Image (cartoon, rainbow, N blue to C red; front, side):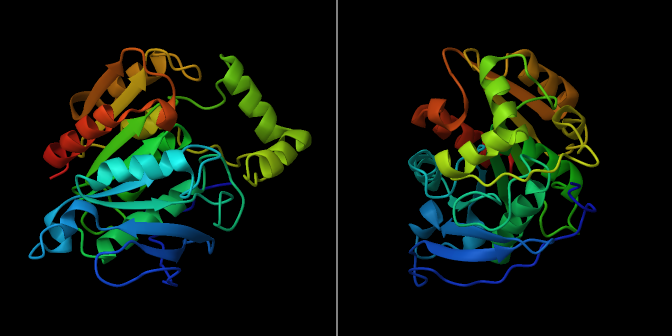
Length: 287
């Protein structure tokens, strides 16, 4: 399952599912380049505090959740609320998750979902967009930036100005930890996919990748000139610390690594203080 040609920007069809006026959050369905409907939420956040502020006056954070998450999960809403103190926030459910259509390809075609969300943020008037991904979403933000262009690629409506990858793998097919061996069983076995559907509300595509998508570490090499922040916990049970070090090294001068003492994996392990630091980094580096 290939993610399609780089630069193929998704179109969106807006269908409100809640409050749409004033400064209230807006919920809609986006349509990806390959025709999948993606459930998405826009929160104007801190940019709406000043009545004179325009949407483009502050950054928009587009949050890419981890595998088995979705836009309505409490841990995703907590992440969104933390970033909303610093700017506008777009959250969405990857394909196969929550109310979105399709089936999960576990990081391959999900770049199209993220592209639709970024293009929506720019269509709402935001001139600075920062993508923030966790675990699977952390690998997706890396590949998205490599495929769709970054701060210098002004021809791409789905481009990003800065990238934050939290708890992401550096390479595919990693099975070196017990949690990753369980995840591979969930994805590759029919019984595992049934558990995914009914236990985790995640619909997983049965086909293997063909071709294998660009690896996260190779994507990190192609993100420049946009800045990349790699955040990882030294107690991450899924991916040991050689993964973030490989990503930061691949990014070269445009990469920065925060190895957080005592931190575990992804959204559940990312506290409000760390989220605030990430948002402040993005406000400076993503301008």
